[in-house]
Image (cartoon, rainbow, N blue to C red; front, side, top):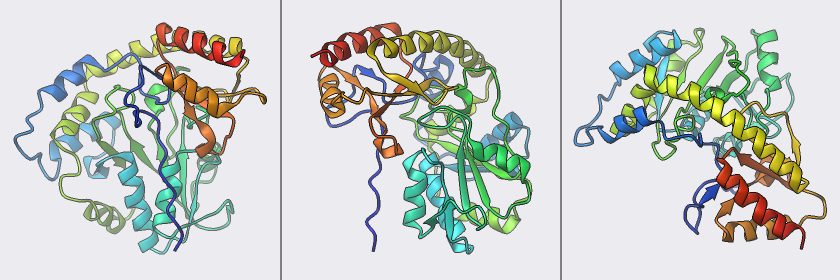
Length: 333
């Protein structure tokens, strides 16, 4: 049996929480005050409604779809495994993932026996993410889905970073694709684990109900329910729009820091993060280790298939100054 790939993530590590953590893509303007207050007021002494009826109605109204199309999930990663399992049970034998993307797409496929393929002629569980991670760019699969709506693939669009687009545009979701939403990044509450998916209108009731039946009871706890309810509110959406203006300004400044360090920015990111290629002569392991000792953490992109690259979430000026000071000091030695 093949060994399951280890999951690689940014964020806290064995050394704790980095003071300047560029390794995650959470909204650096947060947490969102209205949502944080709702989470703090959540009644954790009681079970949530096991069917999440009111929450699903709110989410459906927010997205302009029937509540019956909303599936609750413990997290995006949990849904990735669940839909991979269902696809395998229903006879799908392959999975198609972005060339550079979140490792849990492949991990879930491997766990459930789906063979990764780039062959567009075979039916597959097909993943896309827009803006993509780590590059933050448009995903070519989305435009392909829009041109070819009748393919037999199971299509899932990861919308984790859609609320964090800084170009003023909205990601167009093909009608044939599942939508997977995890607003905790946009709200800067990544410690609250809650997600939901929206089924395409054409999905058969049997497939839809099977996916729900495969979930554990109460996949989303009281704090997750509070976060998702507040996410749909006017206060949260207003705060998010205002935060994007600040993130845009910080991003421009942070890209100048990378230019000063001789790091080449790649991918044309539309989001609150971007990827940079380090100079060929730079000892990346030494650099990352030294920066971590100074409370600075970057995301090594090797697990995304991009060695000698780092992903940087956009952070405030004080963090950018720390990065420039310590990276410059290490690089010029």
